[in-house]
Length: 399
Ligand code: UD1
Image: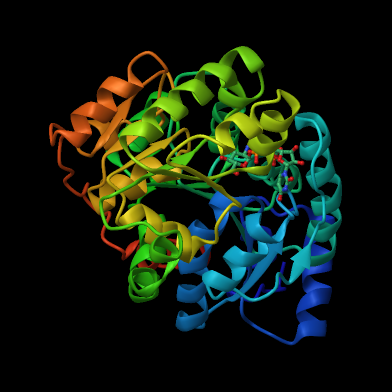
């Protein structure tokens, strides 16, 4: 074809372009009268915002492309979504799919149906998905069936536990994406072992920590800790929301007992995820926990106040993925209430250990007596990942 796309290639040369989409792309180019490639950055749930923000800001700064923020609406409460946009200086999303909650199939299908329409209308030049939430998988499948190129930021992580929905999301997303940006060497190893060709894998480092560095001054100056009446290293932070910890009373009830015991040794602040709050209320555990000595239950916090709390905490007890990395970066002891982790480098090089209801109290005692590993920062966890991602994207688009 003699027709050229905005990046100077014949449309037929762009990998994965489906003809009807090409035509739409061409129409859009004339309407938009721009030669800049359009990049969709997908956000969906709370852990996505701090991974997308540094890249969005970097792409705006570099100016060679037109980054658009696409929010699937998987998380929709102000304190699970809007506050993160504000804290991370992100604009309101350019496109909002408003999918909301549902079963896994409903949520995944909802994103697929809504995003397919957007792809057919806009034919973005590259789509970037992050992390391992249901929307990551849904967007990837939808886009790849339209032959649109997709990159996965935070690729290659594996817990080896297929009972976790996030593990299924990671495996399928990585199998389909054109470009796989990994945070650590274990990510590269998993992908190569799964048969991914090496030229698709680029180690970029941990982008979430770019968000921390971008906002470090504001985080350190924030008043969250003092507002809660806490003092540096004088409290622990708790977050729990995994289905296996909170959805069944047999699992959640002993965890509540553990927290009540732990709060007697160290004051705890627990920003409660909506899923967890709902279960605590259903199982009649909320009042018991809220009334216990040393325990403060609070609403989910924005990025800046939450990181202010984590940064000065004596320890963190969590089942989150990202917090395992943030605590290693900040050298804060982390007790992860899970049987496994997709982030083993936080154990081998950092401050993280896996615990359960049987062992957590003993681990807390070890932290309090100073018997805990100090973290080293893994290679490329340096706050400069967004620049490496942008360079890799530019190479992929302009080569
Ligand atoms: C999702 C991600 C998980 C991530 C977590 C961070 C998947 C499979 N899971 O789990 O990887 O660690 O987000 O929070 O994608 N809810 C609200 N308000 C909201 C969002 C959710 O009330 O803004 C409620 C929902 O109605 C639902 C529950 O919380 O009942 C769970 O939400 P959902 O997005 O399905 O999964 P998460 O547990 O948040």
